[in-house]
Length: 132
Image 1 (cartoon, rainbow, N blue to C red):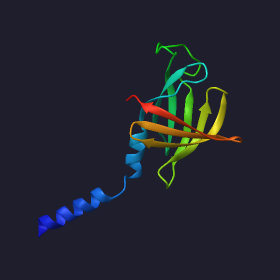
Image 2 (cartoon, rainbow, N blue to C red):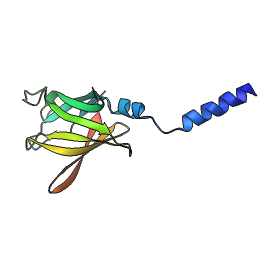
Image 3 (cartoon, rainbow, N blue to C red):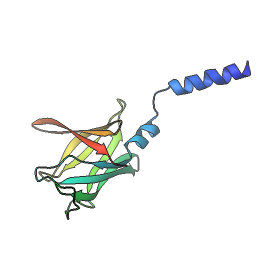
Image 4 (tube, rainbow, N blue to C red):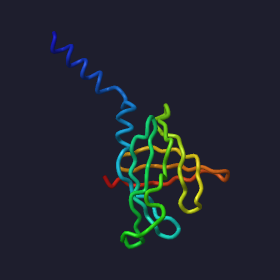
C-alpha cells in the first residue's frame, strides 16, 4: 500500500506542467540569431537578470561564418523579459538593423527561440537556434 501511494505521487508530479523555473532554464544558453540585412549573425547568451531574463551579444560572425568585429559584441540585446502566465516572456529587444528598442515576446520551442518583435507597423517573428 505504501508503494502504491509513492507511485501515485510520482505520477501526479510528472503530470504537472513545467514549472516557471524549468521554463527559465530552457531559455538559458547561447543562441544564434538570423542574419541581419548585412549578413551579420550574432551569438547571444541568455541568463537570469534578477527576476527577468536578459541576453548579451557574445560574438558576431559574417556570412561565411568567420568572426567579425562588431559594436554589438558586449551589448545587451534582450532585457527585462519576464515570464507571463501563457508560457512566454515579455520584455524588450534591441533591433540591430535599425538600432532601436522594441517590445518583444520570447518563447522556447525545443532548440528554437522564437522572438516576436512589435512596433507601430505590426509584429515580426524571428527564430534563433540553440548553440549551447
